Image (cartoon, rainbow, N blue to C red; front, top):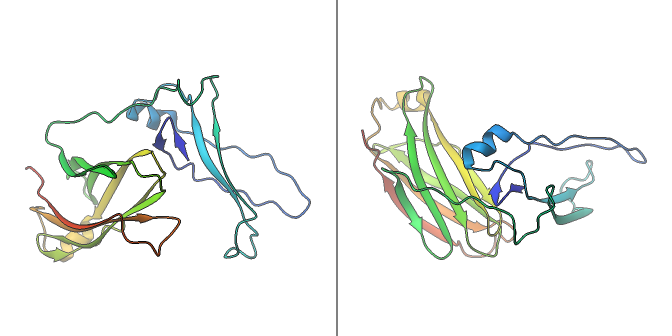
Length: 205
């Protein structure tokens, strides 16, 4: 699901027994959208997937994409915010296929070390981005992060390291984070990676 071109996860699912009906609500956090720069929900795009709940690995009964225009606009007239570059950001990748930027670090929280990131998918494929072989100051630490970005969409995301994991490696100050950024077609895992490259991020203290 995306709103005005930005990925949004409504955390929604509904189970309906055979022959029954249900009225259901999908909530959208307008405060979260305003932080992106979306003041009016002019476009909602999503893929509706229907599966047999007892045969979940079988092909879906329905898998169709839709777009809604609550304010009466169309795909050509919708205002889609663009990423606003920030002082001190680190551009990891920016090519014809995708952009990935780390634009802010939050190291003030007691339990988490957080990277705030932006991604844009310019391919004609729905892609999955994730990190592999992640190390902090040379010690292996896994942030357990992945991000799905539909074709032509953008996304903001948070990559979170647990302080407890950093403490286990006696890491008090993060000097560098090395990671392998991988991106592949989410609908065809057998194809070659769209991106598979090692990068190093050095936060500014």
